[in-house]
Length: 430
Ligand code: HEC
Ligand code: HEC
Ligand code: HEC
Ligand code: HEC
Image (cartoon, rainbow, N blue to C red; front, top):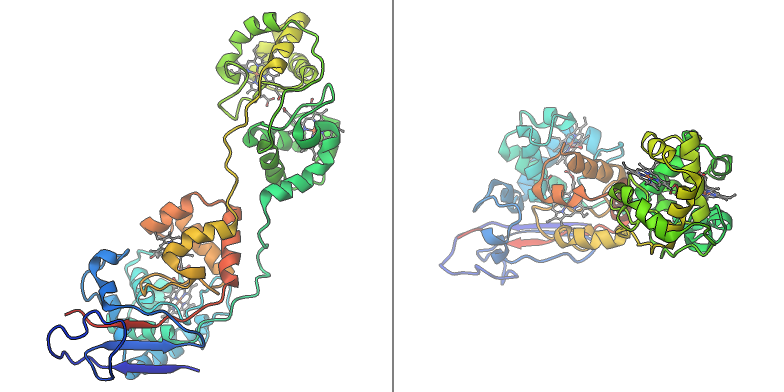
């Protein structure tokens, strides 16, 4: 059920209602487009349209705001255009049934207009839409925007096309249960010969695990341990171990620490002065199990572990030097790498909602609502911002730091939200 009213502007006396939040009586000098959905919407005062408050500066009386002043006749004309030119893809009721085609029903009117202009100018890239709007004038774009904005928004989507987001750290912990027998509870080894994993940079652990899987790094034990572990799980496991508190291995070390410390001077450039590396390409050695360190150096020397850099360096070390270096590094205090725990989709969404409205229900007619939008379209849009295919200074900054997992989590989050139509009560600029 929808009620569409529009009171035409008659510029009455000065100072009349310029900042009213609500129309005082019908026929006052307020122009309003009221879209009453099944839920209460949001109210906007005229002052809101002052240039300073706008995130998308467009000047006074901007063309995109025309859609807010549409009359029932304008909307009827918009509807006729939509039926003939848009419904084939966007659905007769503005609710798309085609992959990656966005829902338009209930979307904010000024936003729709701005995007149509962006397709027209090519600012949104060369795609399906550019051809659809090439020959439409501003008046037609405004009316079709007003029409789609006036429709009931979609029901929140059943999100079965994308994975429901899981907490990567919890997932990593669950997958690492199988590793604890050798690598120790929470990644601190208690078995001579078994490396600790806690406190290693996740980039290094991910690379190590992938090297075992591909056979580039030779270990039957590790190859079979990782046989059933897919790439996303590898990332989660590495993150989980990186976030565990590292501790020195308690297993005994045979060598002479002091002699090792002297010899380690030549290693510091890559592995850090006390074995805490600042570069994930070079593993941290501090607190690592001494037997494992000695075995690794032996393996480089013999060529069973392939690495050009380490092969040359290890070849110069005799057995005593290897033991001493291993004892020295094992005695050093390990340090946790600086790894941030990724935000959950809900935590991210709080940042997004500052612009996109509570649960993605934008209260700014120029900013898109995200609630109940198709998840596949949201994913595409966020990817387009991230790659720069779609340009927006605000969204470039936001999407830069998003991982693939964040994007699918956010898309699923917003697709699930209840969409609310907005009520914009405006008065025209003086
Ligand atoms: C051939 C299919 C097709 C037709 C016909 C079509 N569209 Fe689209 N529309 C798309 C696709 C696909 C996208 C998403 C493109 C992208 O990712 O930028 C889109 C995006 C849009 C957007 C951007 C929505 C947003 O949330 O940013 C608007 C607005 C829009 N269309 C309006 C219209 C209007 C108005 C018409 C009719 C005049 C129309 N479209 C006709 C396929 C179509
Ligand atoms: C049966 C014992 C065993 C199990 C179970 C095991 N590992 Fe290992 N892991 C080893 C051994 C031994 C090495 C050293 C191999 C070598 O010399 O390269 C190793 C090495 C590693 C390394 C490289 C460490 C470094 O400093 O380069 C990583 C990463 C690793 N394991 C991760 C895992 C993960 C994740 C699991 C669980 C999915 C797991 N391991 C299960 C025995 C095991
Ligand atoms: C030029 C840089 C560089 C220098 C100098 C260097 N390393 Fe390395 N080291 C590496 C790289 C790169 C790796 C990882 C290679 C791989 O993936 O197997 C590595 C790996 C290791 C490992 C295996 C660690 C693990 O967790 O599996 C040990 C042990 C090691 N280095 C000891 C030393 C010692 C001892 C010295 C000094 C004698 C030294 N390195 C000097 C670059 C260096
Ligand atoms: C500083 C304000 C701001 C913040 C914060 C913000 N956005 Fe946006 N967002 C915008 C603007 C402005 C646009 C329209 C840009 C354009 O014209 O392409 C937009 C567009 C979008 C679109 C495209 C909608 C459509 O229908 O095509 C998506 C999806 C989106 N934002 C998601 C997000 C997500 C997810 C976050 C949080 C990670 C976020 N935004 C945070 C301002 C913001």
